[in-house]
Image (spheres, rainbow, N blue to C red):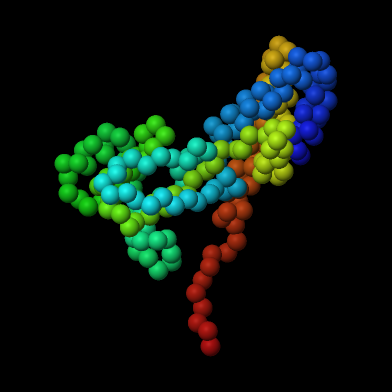
Length: 208
């Protein structure tokens, strides 16, 4: 479902063709995406980036579409399957301050505002590899589709109709559509877990 199709369907489901609703539909989409980004975490949102270390740099900026950490590690040299990997463990900002007085050698990180703080500080020549959940890209007349509108249009539609009904003060109907969106999100997350972990475990066999 693209942006035009979503707008048309949302107005039809809400039975609203008035100009005030039409003028605010992009705002309703933004509000829906804000809600989705707070609660949805699936593998379809996962992406990987690499950041080279800078000598004695403690803070590294997170991507602007960051919505949650899935995995982080430190690669020795350029990322490849043959390089050594150093695990990085999450700690709170308070705990990372305590680490300064220890000499455990463990590499730790925390999230401060929109940055990753790491300790101990690293030299050049390493790569921070981050797998994170992306925010849902904003749907608009220019960027008319994204992975969520293509694969799960019911989530978008329920959220936008809920926003329309709240805007026109139909709060009970708005709540019903919001519940519908929540159920769709729950179903997607259950499906994601099932698909991620389904199937028999891999086993090693001797080749004769």
